[in-house]
Length: 186
Image (cartoon, rainbow, N blue to C red; front, side, top):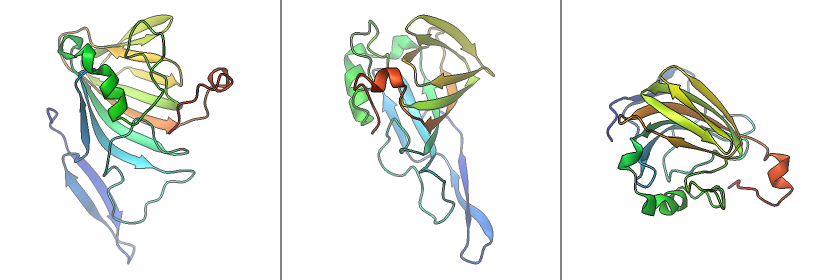
């Protein structure tokens, strides 16, 4: 882990009193060498209503790309400069996320992918270029991107790491893709 931050999670005792359940670095991470990024899993909810019961770590286990159907996923993403990536490892990156079919077939950029989510991405430090099929925009610290199930990818052309928070909310597939049988939900 190259980022130094902690994740604090609260809990409730059987008697109804609040307490600190965990306080330390996130335990569930995944490095994606092809895309030169690291996921730091923070929390996940199932749907339609999240549960605050129990003491299990909601992100213990394998890192998955999408949240559960009807749920959310919250993570910190560290995106290294694209010169640190390995194009030979990109397909393996997507396979390791158990996210079959999210890569956009025939795209010029093999990292182009589509999610069945609404994503709230907040740039915390550095900068990144958000790329869609018909354009791109530079995002800097403090900027927010609302990603709405469209094909996209990220490029860090700055030479320095970019860190952003991402909250992924499960969403209905866009009809234009669902009608083609091009769904990607887990």
